[in-house]
Length: 625
Image (cartoon, rainbow, N blue to C red):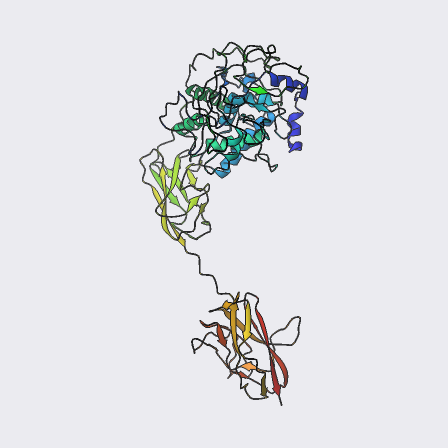
């Protein structure tokens, strides 16, 4: 990864000392997973994923708003190709942080395509939560140069959450603190989520899940936002996701404002050169619980400074920056001063325009409603009308439909929901029974991979155009039961120890009977191949002379034919006697071979019996003159 990021860091990244000075001027919002409810949530229903708590905890956050003008100057481009846009400083995102947001979007698009997570949403939250990791103060791997930590959750003005990570993430071995650029509480990172395994993720492929790493934190936040099968292209789901991160209507407005701003265009700035936000606000409430007792608890936070009065830290603590004097307070001010009462040691960089009064709500809607697709009159089913898979496997063909208008032309951008109807254990990727996918430019929506599950039976995959009065398109799907495993035998033994001897031109008086077992138990219905072979101990092959079989054999339990020889010769076919055949054991595991005859050859010959599971039995046949 270091080589990958070297280009970005060489674009003018500040030295560690300069970046450290910038760190002291900033504050971090508090813990993901620390609050349960908060005034301002007007949805009337829980917004956090089931079994978890809000990720941000309703704690103080940066209240700076984006400028009113577009981030792209005349002649600039909001796209990724061509010269980089160079609009207002607020549109600049540190290179490594920007890369982490985009990689998280790509990863989530693969694992949960129906969520449609935009990287600009992660950027908006990252801006509000930590000022993009304090202006991009991260190393080549994306890990913050210093921990970004919230206040100690010791019950003194906040919730009491005793240590859950032994200080590994937050440096505190007595109580938890919110950590990292996306502000996760350690217990939420490691123990949250619907299955209790945590929202932590490995976004940079180093084998670790570190909330202090922007790649890991961005991916974890993205998966959290997509929980509960949310489709973030739907405004109500988008609102719920953001309110689940911090259940505050003001927080939602701030994030939506930055989301709309970033969607108009951004540009990359060197790590450590990002514009630092200054204003903080927001309050939260919660409850105390002991560490490890179920989902991460909420916590109570005291308000940060009133917007516009300074650069307070809302109760945040940080590790000292290199070169700072003993007693210096994070964020500036004098020793012993109250949080929020001092000035930052480093003023915000960049020429950004004057900030609007953060006490006033945004004067424009946070986001524009999505453009309504062209009218859809039909969903056309593509591919086979029926799908079949074996239990435990995946369906080979995905379910696809095409949205068409009245003229039969494809319609792009139509949300199509694929839902499994009927009793089935089949699931789409992500273990969900429904998913929403937008149609592409060709009007086609393709459902994610469908796993058959373990339950045999039939069900329907129903495709519907969300919010439109269009008949659904159904695809019949069938899951076949796994075929019964073939009987096995790992040992073969004769039922008699008598020597087998015959004169040339006659038959052996003593028949050959064998018993098959598997792990010491009778093996019924096992295929056994009997072959007259040469005496080459390394590579025996079918013999072309000596004893041969008279014809079909019998299983001891059936008394009749138990199988057919795989050779083409018969007793009447003197040119090519039958010297190899395959038969099956009876219900008692016994197999009696057909009569063995001799030609004019004398000497010692070998009969070799084998099973597919490696059992081998060699029987000696003696032919005298």
